[in-house]
Amino acid sequence: MRNTPRVLIVEDEAPIAELIAVNLRHNGFQPTWAMDSESAQRELNAVLPDVILLDWMLPGESGLSLARKWRQDARTKSVPILMLTARSDESDRVAGLDAGADDYIVKPFSTKEMLARIRAVLRRRAPEQTGGPVAMGALLLDPTTHRASYDGQPLKLGPTEFKLLHYLMGHAERVHSRGQLLDKVWGDHVFIEERTVDVHIKRLREALGPASALLETVRGAGYRLTAQPLAAVHGPSS
Ligand code: CA
Image 1: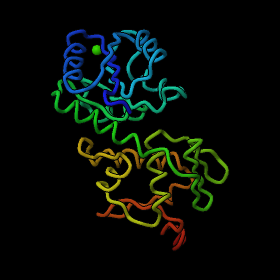
Image 2: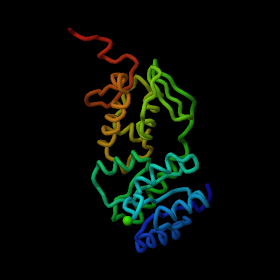
Image 3: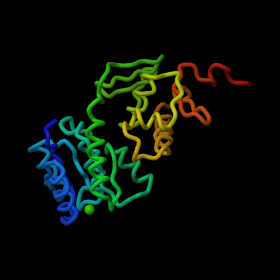
Image 4: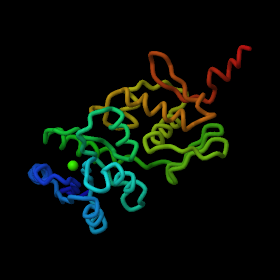
């Protein structure tokens, strides 16, 4: 990465964008401002930034929809996205993360917080996307193609569920606390509440369908992915 990381600010409110840009420039970043989705796309087509600060509420196409689009685009899919939002509701934040945002910043935010999150997201991005396919019984996951399947059936996983499953498969049979999962899967748990883990575990279970029994809740301790779920080991009691 360059010494002055490029930050694309997608924000329709000029005073906010201006303030962010000034602070970024003072702190060794190179900001570019786009005030709507079209100019943001133009900027992205021209130069790929190191981070995108993406406002949720934009005229026309929403930040959420842009995040989703950029995540699916091969060219932009690995550029970290930080959502800027006035929504502090947990479900909204989870929606942002599910759309592919790496983190979110709730408005109003301090420069210090913004810089900390940008730096965290830049740090976090690097060690990801490594390793070959992993298998656990009929459960298969390939980080290169970003595909997972159970018994030959493809699993529909959001980006976070994919990362979570990848980590759990790589560290199966062990119990992981919520804090440990945040640390290992989210990479920097300072800003995310532990309940977020539960939300993603629930989604992962739904996506796993028949394989959901493999993902156990260990009361008071956390979660475990196991090849021998208790339910199957002991069998039905009737
Ligand atoms: Ca806005």
